[in-house]
Image (cartoon, rainbow, N blue to C red):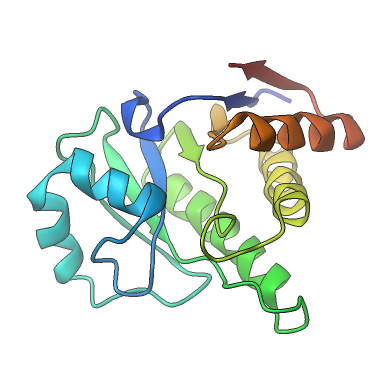
Length: 177
């Protein structure tokens, strides 16, 4: 496996990578959590570009410039709201990750950083979401692209869950707090 998978306890808006992923809402016009932080750090130009994208469907992804962020691009994806697990939530979350990787390949991006999509106000169970995220990352890493896949948990508890799932999958992951 040539791809390096990392889990970093950091502020995703400070990472110098080709793209950071925004856990956006359907409007793409900003919100709370990581979405609000990315919009704030990127500046008003990001909001202006997002206005022209006509929103985003759940499970899909769209790319914008990074503007004032150290990241060159932002990939906006809309994760599912967790209900009870019987409304296609796992397929939609998997689709978020797959569509982000698809955009990374299309735009020749070698490093991509993900937040814990849908695990905040959307209520997706952290363990289930992390298993999906790391399984998709493992599959992409086996394909040898991109060079770096970074997960950026929002707190120490989330960091711990990434560590547990990586061990469960016997996945070689570099951790730094």
